[in-house]
Image (cartoon, rainbow, N blue to C red; front, side):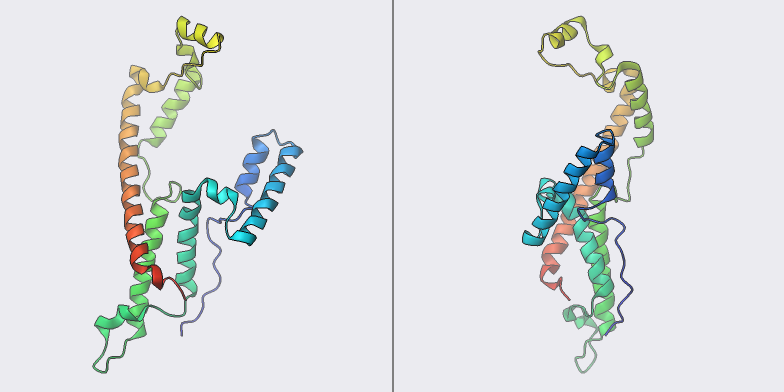
Length: 220
């Protein structure tokens, strides 16, 4: 039997009462108390829902994001605290008497779990090891564009567009790729974004394939 490791607190927690959501709630509402108390009420409701049915409304609203954090954390905890490994993983390493050495199955199961953990993390934008190489230049250009022309590019609106907006016909939004000086960085950024999206989609497909293959082995 393997010795249990000291409990590891995940780097990214998936609980309801997290600092990030509270900061967004407070900052987005001018640090007033009423929105804070309202958010506390939601957290109490969501906590009861998780106890009663295992998930809450907030988890359902962005289910893929919830699973992107939940699955790698669960897999990492399984790897850190498990007592055994699937015996069939050591079949190729069995000795003359047919015994299955635990060290073989443990090492192979560690490798499989590590791969699954890595793949699920790669599907998440924040945890992904790859980043858009044009992001810094793109954000700099976007900041400059918004400073010159407004967040919605409203300073680029024609007289007709302004008149339509004044009459309640909707606001025409202009983007920075419409201007020659920003077109190149916009196109480069979008091209790299598509490559990154393809990579994350491939990671998701491989992670799903591994989940299907080892689904009934995910227990301790």
